[in-house]
Image (tube, helix red, strand yellow):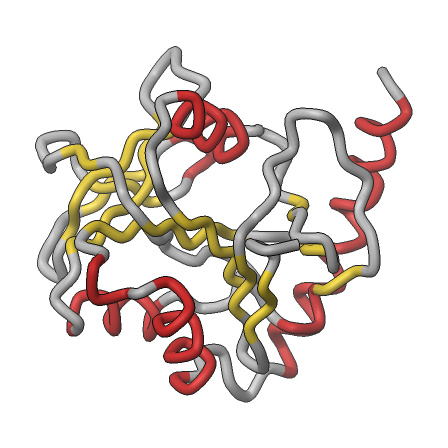
Length: 195
């Protein structure tokens, strides 16, 4: 096992415990004014299709974020891991949709929902750093999916959604780790698109 992979595995254990403590003490998980800053940065009105996720365990709650996206008239989608695939697909959902447990016991939209290619992605993080890199859970699904979309010259924005205290100065990273455009927290918006 290479050193970076080992560093990331060790860091995931530490940061999972840290995030659990952050979650226990969190009073606010969605900040409308910070979300509005993001909307201004990316010309949100021109975006139709938005991907988010259903928060699990100690992740920052996506409940208000997802409801806001629907309320603003956008097509909201969630990731699905298709069997024998190493990339994500995204299926449209609405507030009445049924879900099933997918790979890793993460709730996913049922299979007959429409696939879309979002223009804006909100992604989960165990941590993020001040250069725009995130530490996920180690599957590499978002990294490979974003790399594929870039190769196809698709224009999209990637936004980490996390607690502000999940910030690290630097994270170990590998050549395939995808740099986020923004990180949205309950306290502020971090901008990496122009760095």
